[in-house]
Length: 247
Length: 247
Image (cartoon, rainbow over all chains, first blue to last red; front, side):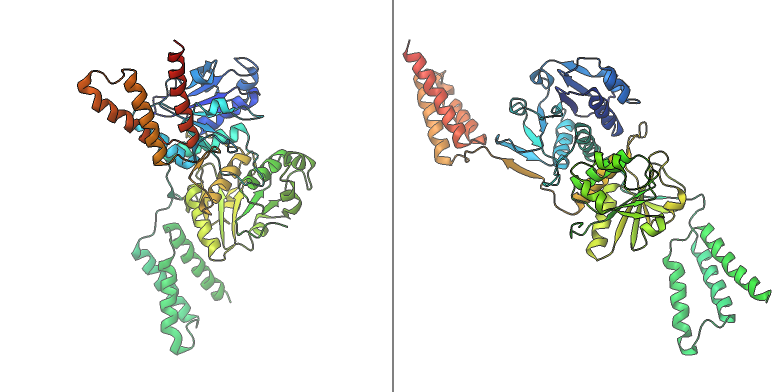
């Protein structure tokens, strides 16, 4: 069963190579989409090459709706996007994938069914397919080199759906097992260095000593140090002292 | 020569299959990036399979910097991102591709060199590579199915670079040759329909006639009609009248 998660249907219109259908399934499932519709695939259905390529996302193929015409493929949808690589001279709004999927998320939140059409590999959607869409999605590729394949187009659109669905964590800290050091530990580290470096004659000349100490203290507190970092920095200093004491 | 456009360098670390190097070059050039560095490719360099796959983006391979170690690959960079599929337990900030490329754009605007590391296909970057990076990029894929390949990871990162570089047009109208209709044309269209439909007995019953006329007028003005649309709608009505007159 497809997931209950609200999402657009991705409709592959007259796809040619089974491998590309499988790769499109993988691209969708990478971003949690699992409602695929397939209109009149060239090589029939099911397609063993699609299954082989989809490994891990084969469920999407098993559950895909096989449909005869583009019109039937979007019959239950209130809003339909058509992906195209170039302008077609049809009077229709053209959205970036980002804007399109933001709009899709709004419509889906209102309970509407939304579909995205992807054309055949060689020539893309026909104008007759596009005339059934409310808007066009145009991936903003380098005008000198526009060579996205079907699965890449599906990948970028699915990626933008996930962003629009608000499920992306933009920033976090991957922590080692150690915790962050507390201020008291930073303080002791600073004291340790100040003391030993003082003995070593580091704070010279005399009239600069105070500002050198301030700068050094500031250096420790500026760095995001873990407890393990602090222990390592203590160890570095102790080892230098030991080395010195060995003569 | 690589373009003058400020951009991050994409560093492929110990890539294995030539096909994947070629596909990565295509993915980069789709979004206008052309500074590739290659660290210790498994099958030597140049690689004919990479060239065959890169078709159209072969210049990136010709101009790629071949480098022996990851350290040399980022030696001139002030800020380095490492792409990983999973957390590594190194204490480092982890960014979404979007946040990472926004940060890259800021640093590049300040004149800093920025690099993004991509690991070998099978196992990804080693912790020793990642320890050379300032931050991690983690593509937020479906935790049940994380199967991005090297070129897809390059594609999504390059796509986000282009978004961060602010070169994306989010919305425009793809126009047919016709212009938008002016208000006077909409007005005449409304009058034409109102007159003919009045003759045809459409505005019935009498006490609803005014509100029906208002709703019809509102329908025309609500639609984004081109001059060609208006002509076609006039034609539709004229044809119905002719058909009626033929008896």
